[in-house]
Length: 173
Image (cartoon, rainbow, N blue to C red; front, side, top):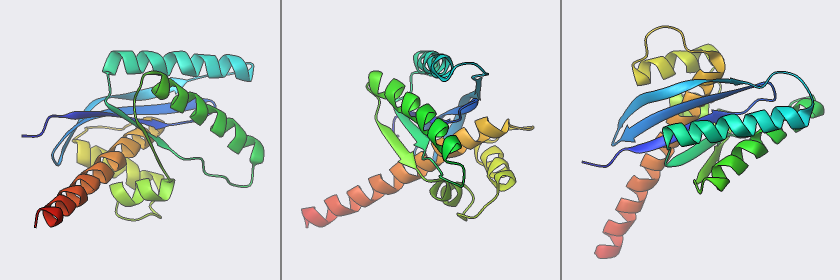
């Protein structure tokens, strides 16, 4: 049996950052923890400091092996994209300071991995996260998105491992 890998998924935001932690063993994924970091208002430097401290605490408490984060989606509002990029930068930096590998995924890739369609809406992602992790009740939107990021990473790493095993088999022949 394969040893479990703990994955921390992060859905960065300038005011609310979702996090989700799962344990993955083979094709089985188990919910460990999830929630939202409410950064609040104030100077951007203070909000980023609070985000850094909160993510560092989550990493200390949950001891993930790997981190996955959603990539920035640039829409019409450049200011929003910049603030989101700052939150992503803090999340990546906290993981790097903890010597954790970081994988980044586009929203369409996450939706494809979790729902089967890169054009799925938030409700479909939330529903499939609950189904895949056997969660009862409602999951906070940002926490559910972060769990989706973690599930996407679990699927992508499983695919990479299968491909590597196939390549190793080819080299042995």
